[in-house]
Length: 475
Image (cartoon, rainbow, N blue to C red; front, side):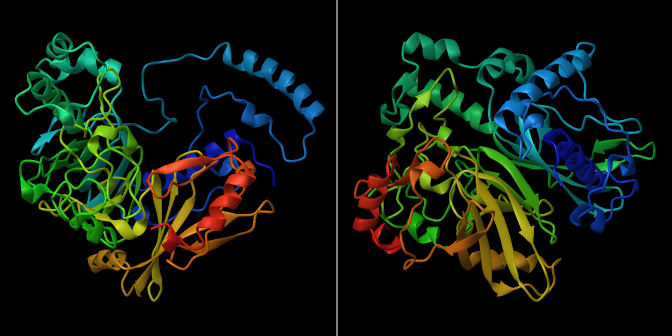
């Protein structure tokens, strides 16, 4: 069956709406963690889809379409889109299908436990704690710097130190990590970076449905923020880690160490996520390279914070002045919203890369399977399979299964088949030719210096394979 992109989005939204809202006003466990079959046609949807302003050329792409047909169809569809959308009304609101409503639960700057509601929401999870009540866990992914600068004082109630920084330096890119502790510029960059990292991370708020159907906050003692700096001043709010990278965090190696061992300061660049059947939430750290160094040495230790300087106009490099170790970011974070003392655990067996969401397969009598993708050009699809077996999908002890297992990378073939490659020490090094990747390049580990380089030719690949036979040769 050939399915147009817009039709696919309608089906997808229908499936999500059925799972998240459904026709039952009372949340149930199966409603929140189960799956809903996609309707076979739009007439079976539980609502009438709204028209959205999303005309695009993807509608034109059909599997067997010739180039000439494509051009004719493009012209035809363009005329159709002009006719359809010349009367489209854009309104500053959340437009929903008939019969659906929304409630504003929290906005940027609202008090949340030990901090405030953050900026630019991404994934939102609901974990029920009873009838018509539960916890929302929200990701705060990034800062839109221009708008953030303009509206910060109005929303938060205090000014940012922008004038002070600009009076002390004309530079936009600054290695604040190298500045003396007594330098006034360093002090102002700390203030600004702290505000930025406060607006990133994860938020947990309790909510309840009122008799009139509205959802409101209940401000429980478990409401809290896990910011980009959690644990910096209060060790009990540090994030923890499991898996093989913990040994790297604790050692002195080739590169930089923050000397905090297995403790981790904060989480940021939190994109999509997932919710487990046992009631914990998984948050995916994605574009962490905006704030700390992504590159590591062959022994897994970090590059120095100097490599990712503070950038004022873009509000990037926010980890620079605090000396954050880059190898502690780029993971999947698990948090139990009902446990007020839980500030998150990074499970390093799930892999370090630019995570975009996580899919979970949990079946009694089987290992756990977690799937996630690296959201970058040339990125891969990965899965983790636990060493242990699931006994009860709702048991919170299942989190312990994430501490030991195997990580696999997917290799796809042009015919749609593929295989899972275990990332073990004796796995052969056999990268794809660059021309099969978008952009005609593939990123490979650079040795012995660390970091990576862009392989652009088949000769680059061949030389790499001759020098490194297995993954053990690279790490």
